Image (cartoon, rainbow over all chains, first blue to last red; front, side, top):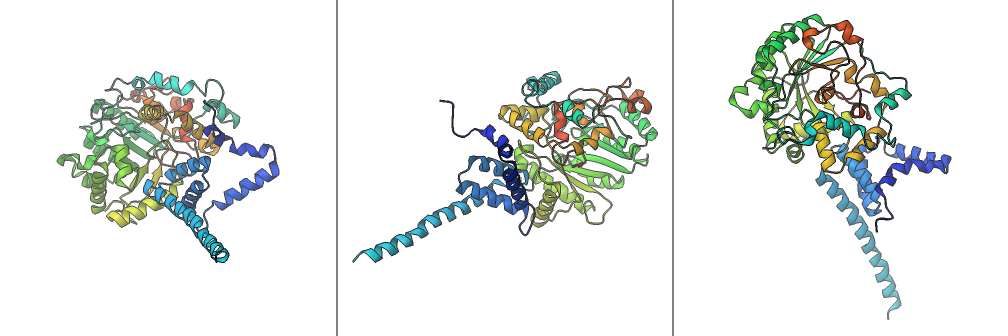
Length: 111
Length: 350
């Protein structure tokens, strides 16, 4: 079976989403472009944040984009992996911290 | 030690084969526009030369390194070396032209046995910017090269050196084991004689080529990161960083095909096409002279054996008027110089 849900070539077509709704599509890309401009955070720092979020969101398109973006900026593989661990730590922490909610509920319901 | 494509009898040592690969596939079926078609859209076809500003002379393809991305396919096994006779013809032309920059390249130009004689003679011509493109490790390759920093200083040579990254791993992967440590030592030797210091007239610039199938990022941001890391880790100073896009020819083309990155890379180049960069690509103000004296629009066309489209094809026949009146030869590899902020031997152009 050669067909999959994700096709790497689809990433190149991302810009075409404006074709079915130009106004909202353009607004999104304007916003997106603005977010990644150099600001209080450097473009390099933003790239690493985006890479970490790409992993927690498990978006293969984003992972490809921000891995490439990181390489272009001279970001090392060690820095990239550390960023992914930061994302993973927050993701697992976010799961675990809900354990408190579970514990609260159990404590409330049990005699 | 790795070998050049030529020594390995690799298919891609044949420049005709490279041109076939570049012209076929996605460019032949119209999936991607050819470079000629692209520049026609903005009325920039045919590409014409402006006033000659830079004479770039390739002193030979011999090199002590075998870098994975080398567009020259240089290496220790390459024996092509410019003779004194051709050097003399170049000197005659240098005195005649109004070019303000002389740019010596290779291979490792320092490995040409008549390199020092040529530098001494050329430096008398009063060129404003006299560049030697050094791979740095040559300075540490053999005792006979240890005094190169002093020699460069004596002739006020502008040293432009290759450095793909501020970390050992990335540098050695592209350029060979041990290259990083030798390059660091060579940069420190250049600093010791006064190169690269703030306010110093002894110019030391670095050239950054991406170590893989991706385009260079913002040149200024990379320069800042290089400066910070090299200063903190090794107390090294330099002036500017030139970010140069790898062109899909020769060994880099071989790498792209072998790693199955060729198609994606060409798409990336075409998507990043910047018509503003076309105005200032190096072939418009540069003339490239090969080791055997033939003339090319740029070093990349030289490596594809695409001689200038002019009656004058050799330095011995140099005629400014005839050469000015030519069209620059283009092909799909030219997308490499017009992607993003553009690329040339002097870094970004747009």
